Structure formats: C-alpha cells, structure tokens
Image 1: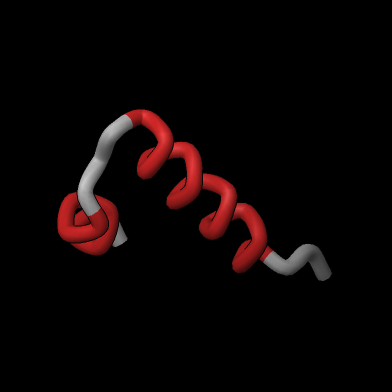
Image 2 (image 1 turned 90 degrees about the vertical axis):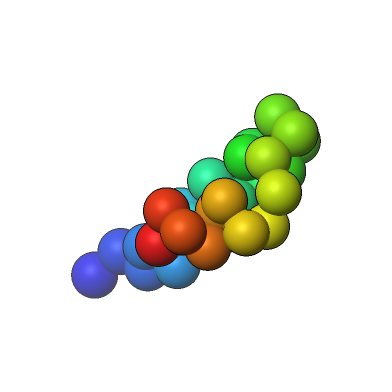
Length: 29
C-alpha cells in the first residue's frame, strides 16, 4: 500500500512554492 498522503503534501508544497494560496489548494481537494 502506498501512502498517498505524502503525495498530497508534496503537491501542496509545490503549489505554495509556485505562489498559490492555501485557499486555492484547499479548493483543489
């Protein structure tokens, strides 16, 4: 079983680094 939680965390970090606000990230999920 692969923990996809780490994948989501990496995606969030990448989005924040790109300049995305937490609200946009929350909307994506």
